[in-house]
Length: 362
Image (tube, rainbow, N blue to C red; front, side):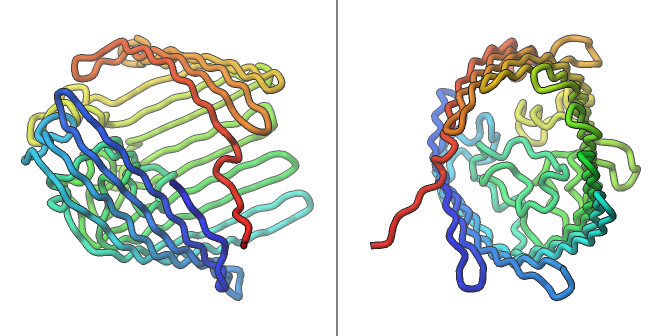
């Protein structure tokens, strides 16, 4: 359930996101969870064009779990029941400086965010099941996120400051948009994040993004993460697309210095499996065609070390002004925990306006 209020007299909004689920495994951890993220956000425009945002946030989860000593948690205890939560107060300042000349616009925008919250440490999560926060990645997409984990089962804690610089250039259909930034903490949280993701110390790795579209039939997106000590590239994600909408070709390259999913292959403290120690180095080829409301496409992802496919798939989609009907079919050639060559067929039916409704006053 997701809710966003109308602006109050100050211009602030209240938002609430709630989720609940039940997971049952014949062999492995089983748990029931309910979590929420309650937030109040107040934007304020400064006298010199600066944009302030003041935020109060409360995230928490209630849980009941057993067999936590088995996959995927490998906890030191087998049962866990309780409620955890973390309050956060934050202020974000962005100052977009804009220069226009004819049909050209240049934007330079420094961004600063400071978060204040208690420090819990990893012991706080002993006995808490982890179902939706198993695959953290640190990129420009979550540089300013309150929680770098994708779910509510794990939280970052402690004071933090995030710094970034956003630049953009627009001229007659040509677009460049980029962001680079870094995060700073008052104290590390050892053991909270897997090794090699750039977040274990008090200074994070440097993350960035660059998007360039020289024409409507060509665009490129580059995301990267640089080790803040050696300046080595520890993460790289490149995507390029070419051609008109009725025949669009895609080329992608992905590199990561580690593979965090292999942490699930064994309990903490055991030697890291060999696949974790090798970089993930993959290239993707794809093609899409679009005619009216119909889109059809296919792709293949290949491991550059072995020359073997990682995934082969295709998709079809119908979209109109009311809903989207999508079908995906793909086969995974990777092996994890004794399972390999998985074939997945997936249907998605989306109502575009289902998330918005109005209740008239009596």
